[in-house]
Amino acid sequence: MLLTLSNLQALRVDVVPNLTVENSFSVKLTDETKTIREVLSQIDARLFGTYTQPAVKNLRSIIHNGISSPSWAPGPNDRPKEVRPYVYEALLSLVLVHTQVSTTASSLTAQVLSYLLEQASRELLDAFKLRQKYTLSELMQATLDVEFVAQTLSQYTTDRAGEMQSQIYQELDKGTDNEARVLLQNELPEMRAVLKRLREGSRSEFACFKKARTRQDRAPAPSLPVQNGNGNQI
Image 1 (cartoon, rainbow, N blue to C red):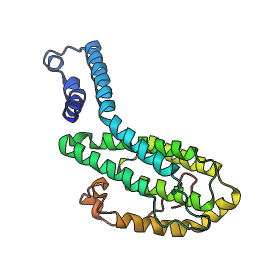
Image 2 (image 1 turned 180 degrees about the horizontal axis):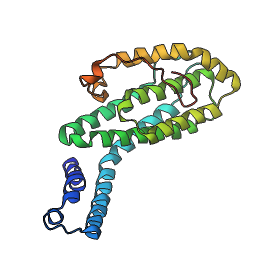
Image 3 (image 1 turned 30 degrees about the vertical axis):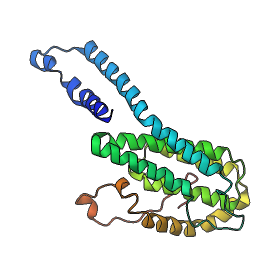
Image 4 (image 1 turned 180 degrees about the vertical axis):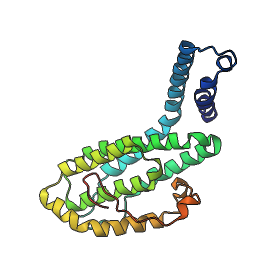
């Protein structure tokens, strides 16, 4: 199926725009070309949905089971130091997808992973909506979980994924009180340190998601803070 999707992509991007009859005889087949593109797009969308559906279903199960579990919430006086196991499980399932796509039809890797990041973000949003109240510790845990996913898959982020991640923070904000919001600001430096440690500790597990460095990329760049959906720096 991946090879078929890859071939369809080549048809849409390379073949159809440069039909031989148009180039050879200077005849513009505008309507015909449009019809071909539409048909190819429809076939592509169906096959893409068929291929990604099992991965999306798996992500939904992992995320909802993880967040709805009684063990997800930290104790009221705890300060989270780890993301919950469901986060690693979800990301490792995407490692398998990445391996399959990159070794079979590498041109589709970014498209597939970006789509699955969007779906994972949607499932996180839906799952966190089911928890109506958040203590400070729960707010910190949710933020760690979401930021770890977003940072690990940052190479594949899209406007839609970023939008849903912002909606997650808005949803969390609805379920907390002003005291927790204020206290969260004091916890941000420690949370940044925790995220950095977790990212470094999982570097080998999720190395496939890291963008390959070019010669131009090797120049040192200034370190920028990451912000969550409320503008809080993480």
